[in-house]
Each structure stands twice: as structure tokens, then as C-alpha cells.
Image 1: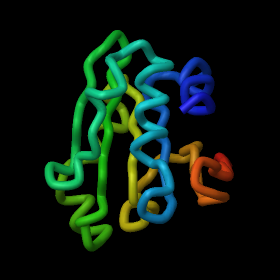
Image 2 (image 1 turned 120 degrees about the vertical axis):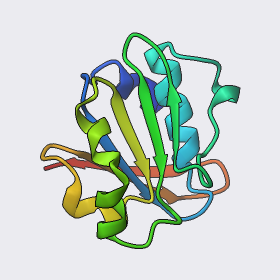
Image 3 (image 1 turned 90 degrees about the vertical axis):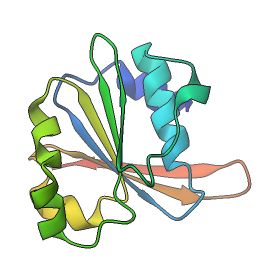
Amino acid sequence: MKFAARLATSLRPNDVIALSGDLGAGKTTFVKGLAKGMGLCDEEAITSPTFSYLNIYEGTTPLFHFDLYRLSSEIEFELSGFQDYFCAGGITCIEWPNCAIPCLPKKTFFIDLMHRGAQKREILMRRY
């Protein structure tokens, strides 16, 4: 959460973050840290949109929180209209982005979270 809160201060409208990691690696916790760093809402208000695909947290710069775990293909992603959020003036954060990777904008932040103990995570961040 601390890393995500610090990262939030350097993000700009229309930035996209693709979060990968095993179940329980901390993807939703990372989004909680982003929301906190953006001054949006209490971390308890942040939940994974596993069954709705998208939660929107309003603020000066909104946070668009996607969970694509149940999406099965790039075509399904394209047909959903989700790409419209990439230029809607908010920060887009996508959990389980694999099926959407070909559709993501250039300069997307790719963040991989890996378990390194019960309370430890390794974070690998790259941007193309």
C-alpha cells in the first residue's frame, strides 16, 4: 500500500496500470494504496470488481478499477468498450490484464506482485 500511495503522487490523468500476480498477491491492496495516495476514499471502500468488471472511485482524478479475471479474450475486451476509460481523464488500474495486453496504450505501467512471505511482496514495475 505504501508503494502504491507514493506512486499515485506521480501519476497523471489517463495513465494505465496493469497489475499481475497470483491470487492473494496484493493486487486489490495495491489499488487501495493508489486510492489512498490519490485522496479518493477510505481503503475499506475499495473492493475487487470481480463480478462487475469495473468499479469507479470518483475524485478530482477518478480511479477506474478493472478486474478482468473472468474475461476470456482480447475480442471480448474490445467489444466491452472498456478502452474508452483509457482516455477519460482518470487513472485506470487493471487486475488480471492478460487478455487485454494487446489493447493497452503505450506507456502502460506493468506491475507484477510476487509473494515473498506472509507479509512481504516483491514488486516489479516496468513501463513500455
